[in-house]
Structures are given as C-alpha cells and as structure tokens.
Amino acid sequence: MKKILTTGLIAGCILFVISYGGLFLAVRFFPGLFMEYNNPLFNSDGSRDVLFYMHAFIISFALSWFWDRFKGIFKGTFIMRGLEFGFVYSIVALLPVMWISFSSLDITFTIVSTWFLYGLTQAIIAGLVFAKVNP
Image (cartoon, rainbow, N blue to C red; front, top):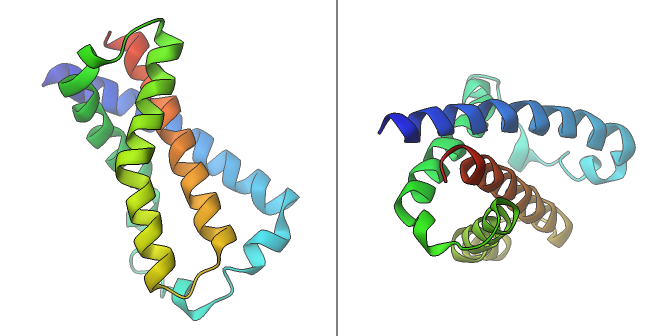
C-alpha cells in the first residue's frame, strides 16, 4: 500500500505540473480550441474548482493501484511498459468514456479528441513513472 501511495503521489505531482503548464501553453498557442469551451455546459460558479485541480492526484492514485495490480503483465524496458500501460488504460477506460460523452453531451469531436489525447498522455507519463519507481 505504501508503494501505491508513494508512486501515486510522485506521479500526481509530475502530472499536476505538466497538466497546468500544458494548459497554459495550449491556451496561448491554440486559442481557437478553447473558444469551444465558451459553452454553458462548462460554466461553473467556482465552488468546485478545487476538484478540478485535484484531478492529477486522483488519476495518479487510481492508476498507481492499477499498475500495482497488473504490472506483471507489461514486459520490456520501462519505456515500453509505460507506453503499453498508457495505451491499455486509454482503450479500456478512456475510449468508452469519450464515446458516451460525445454521444450524450453537446460537445464537439475536437473537444473529445483533445480529452482523449490528454488522458492518453497522462496515462503514459504515469506509466513511465510507475515502471521506473515500482517495477
């Protein structure tokens, strides 16, 4: 359990920095994409913002548990194991969630695609951290 919490915290810190640094850069370099978020669906009164900022840690702890449970399945170098882990998670979990989100919410394919790529990137980065720290 200690290894799960430790690797989850390490990955969470890394994902937090990369996610919010990446968000800043994405808004700066792809402002047209973020114009799509001017939709009542995404407006918030600010009372739940802390939940948004905790996302990197929530996903990291969940993925850390998943890694600890199934790490024996992933073979090869730590890079290959991290990549495979990210792809497996993305196909098993992200793809169905993105499918139902696109089919039931008034969002564009572009938004869903960027969410999928964002989640895939997070899972690969977390997988690389887990493969290195908790082989």
